[in-house]
Length: 162
Picture (cartoon, rainbow, N blue to C red):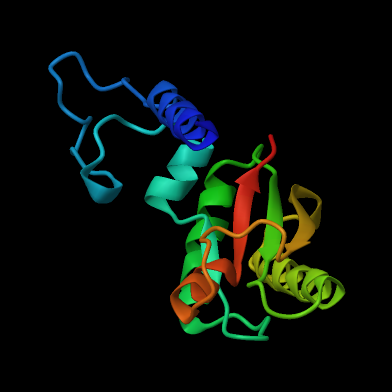
């Protein structure tokens, strides 16, 4: 019974979060583009804009905190986006997979968040605009005890704070 209730609540939350701000003619906006064919246009400078048009997360190898070429490309896009919206500040969240101790993963998550922040700062973003926090293994994006789940949980995520 509790499971059914939780599923219903999750469905209600998703429905209430839907964006219905398309144009009057039902089109998706100027160019009709969007991630995954989404309808509607993300408000410029918003979290959704960051997610849809830039990418809000980067991924790491097992027990690693160095940025891959793919991660650096995402961080370059985030840097350009932050330069376009100079009033935006973010929190860079560091995350780990479930393996390892809580203490080790908190430290690894901090190294991941700091690596991402340092990349942004080196690209010209003020350090005052980027805060870091580590959640270690406490906030998995994907549940599961396999490589596919672990790979999605080894990440740093940019979250707009202002």
